Image (cartoon, rainbow over all chains, first blue to last red; front, side, top):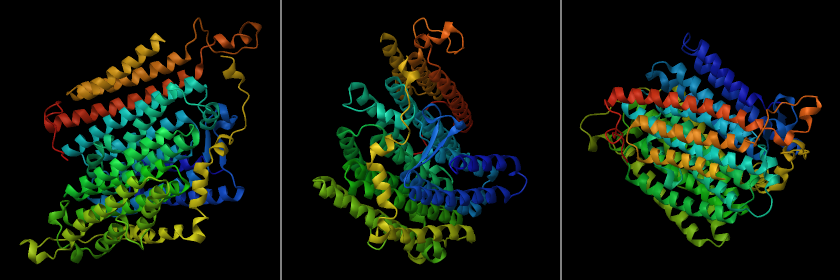
Length: 503
Length: 116
């Protein structure tokens, strides 16, 4: 069974880096890249295995029977998300090989990143509610430290803000888990789902509320988004790429898993998703329009893109969910790429303000071309992947008789184009007409360009996934898993509830 | 039921403190309060009136008493949750210290270099 290794490999890499990292300069990075490459191969393998046995992989920790121990469960959804996450991590690490040279004590960065990856992988594969909380905390603790990695005043401020808000949301989630345990006397997610059939009562709505607030804070839906721009713009560029590509994906995964698979689906929750999602889309894109700091602009745009995903989920139709899942992948790819672009410009010139970036197109050819691809993709221009996922979400909204939301999504997409045109305009301006002092661009190491080109190629390639032949291969299976709640509940053999019934 | 309401009240006091207090250290303390409330809630779930320790022996005495046993699972969960809270508190406190070194204050209204 390969499942426990999703947690073991990054964790042992983190330990290895902590012990040996300070000796050799390259050792830490190489260990990280190797671990990520293995993990990526394993997640692809897990997807193949799941489709081969046509059912989820199960692993019982400690070899006890499953309802009483922690079960690891990997189905299509989990292995799809695993692939996204490990891909992002690999790109970020390759980028970091060149980028982190301007920091000291880089081995700490790699160790933290590996701990974060441990938490994320565990979070995705676990089938136990409290274990979900624990892995989430592992991820977040590493993320808090990564945000404050630069050790400047602003970075500590952002990290403190992120930590306080992140742990606030964790406490909400912990309370909700406690309530669920009180109601069902079990922590296994499939078991909980089975116990909660029938109409949700008042307490159930309380649990829904706590989960929406808790994970809403994590994915930064709009009323809960204040921490995100600070946190993302303060972290080192590879870490921002990880954070935006991954922690957003993580919250989305938790929402999908809990609200579609575990808890009984509730129309009022879907309505909340629709409203919050569309507000996030609009507020995010307007916030991005007003920013001139490149990384903050990207952070606001993240809020907007997450809004699209939540809107697609809120529609609740197969098409909407398909759009949401596909946009999760695309958002991860595009936003990581853009954050890496921002990092590469910062590395070469030290600029983060768009108005100072004139001349990038001449100085940094690969950065310029890849950022062009990502910008076109994120604003939904046809040949790129962003177009397909957005058009699916908009079509799904029309199909579900929600033309208002479709209109909001379409308009915001145009605004996104405006935002990224602004980026391109500022970077394209030739040097002579703007500044008197010629900006100096340092040589960008090959690793940086390599990581960016890798992601840009994936940006174009991933639109293939929606083409008829390939759609059934990956995306349809994921959507099927999300919609098939009974199948998830029946994963685990019916336990005789001797112990819990006796209470 | 009263106990549960009081416990939730403690949680809300934590949220209130988190929102209104201006001192970094008081914010950390409010966060801890919330953590305690959540832990207390878990312990309350497990509580049985006149409960006994959840140890199964092969003797006749305990075998029929499963219904008065204290539920052991939430207690082990709380042990985990406490460890996490400890790690969080240490991280937050060290960050607060570093912020104090940089800004010379604990007041969040004066720590405002980030905007937007």
